Length: 303
Ligand SMILES: [Zn+2]
Image (cartoon, rainbow, N blue to C red; front, side):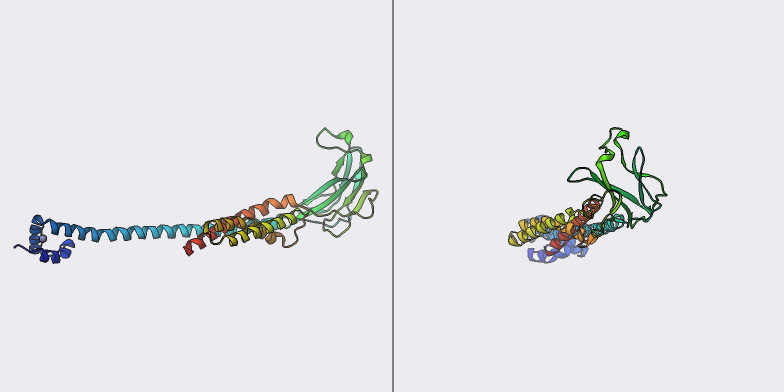
């Protein structure tokens, strides 16, 4: 049976899908052997069938990859937020709070130095030696607890040295002589209670040790930077790339602000900055990572 081109063309889709009878198949194949035009039509038909399939498969794979990546970023985002929260909680738990002067606290001296004795229980004690404007030194003593482990150490009436006299110093660090030491105070470090004189002669009229304001300054600088880069992001909003870079920069100081406010509220004056700053820093970093991941997800959704 010989077929004409139009009939073969009609049969080709069925032939390509292998849905013809054996007889038609033979006839089509016989025609194809002699007709390059129909062979070409068949080839076009077959690639026409195959291409969309591979395209769909590739698209499905890409969608799956995108979804997996988005899921991974979501998990990472949640982890960063959890980490930031954990650092903030740690900061609050580890931050020292100072005890009022224990009633039994007294300062005694011997030939080796000057020490304090008390039966109080605390997490630790800090003594700060500060020079006076008109010469000599004043020592400030504070007992501290943390919320994590309040009352870890019993001081049990044992001597705890505040200053060792020069005669006994072994050459490490600064040493002091008895004539240089003017007074020893207990400071509750609460910013409003006067320090209690424990030893020596009172300095001026009432002594109060003041908190450090460095954290306040850092916070103000961070707010200024966040606002500056936020405004720049807004100004350059037509240039999407530049605007996004500005926004990413602005998120860094903003993360620091959030970490400070989350741990300290608006009470940023602190007596224990060096203890607190590392944890606040780690919390800020985790928050910054979370913010960048969140921005990435938002921008992707927009696109
Ligand atoms: Zn033909």
